[in-house]
Length: 191
Image 1: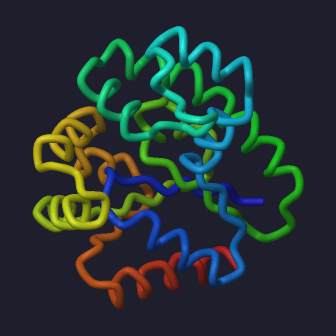
Image 2 (image 1 turned 45 degrees about the vertical axis):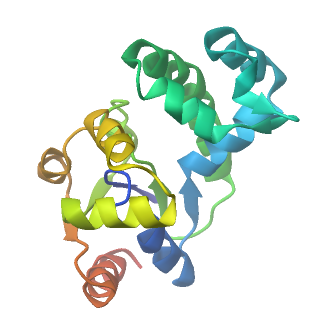
């Protein structure tokens, strides 16, 4: 099975791309969903997170994502500590998940493929890229992030132009039609 990593900065359109791959019958693994599930259900991981950033990381046994992102994106050490705890566990989940897939290829979606030096886990990498003003518009309206918070998160990730240069495919997500067309082109290479 061919393993494809799909990456891009926050708000670039990875979720839209992954939904389209899924609609084509492609097995998809979404690292962020796996991370949130693990952070909520893995008691050892939960206690380690609380040690690093405090009890406010969870409210009524639920992940307090707003608090966590507010704290970790302002402190690079905390961000690194949390990533070093969570990402190896996500990788384990992906490895288990992969064993149960039966298709020509699968797609693993994660913003931090290059940041985590996990590009060697994949046969091919796709980067989704969007204009910065569009990224701001999406995140400020959809998630209600401030411009400052969007910039903090973007600054914690490798620049999308650099990600594109390191990737096998770079999709400029300017319109849904164009995104769809490029995904179909890639899909046709592997089915």
